[in-house]
Image (tube, rainbow, N blue to C red):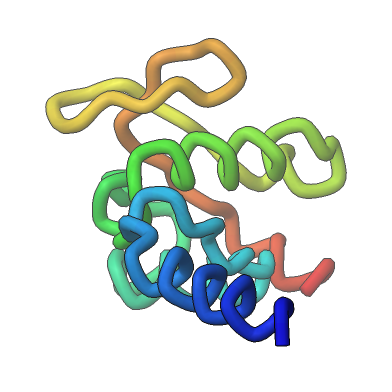
Length: 106
């Protein structure tokens, strides 16, 4: 069976793939807001982007995507302070606060 060896090789390659190469599971807006509220205890408070528990590149990608959507981004307020810096659509950012009104679109 010529295909069986190739199949085993693919499985071995998948097992040996470092974690950094696996694509991240997408975080929905609802999940992001729930995570934000668990970090801050409520709306309107600054949360460090590093507190969301994502890898650096994932954090930048996720927040950049939401920042590009006007219907979502109007509820997000990014700031730069002490802490790990991220590039959100080219701007240096460390924290985000989210308005309670975002619940209207969840």
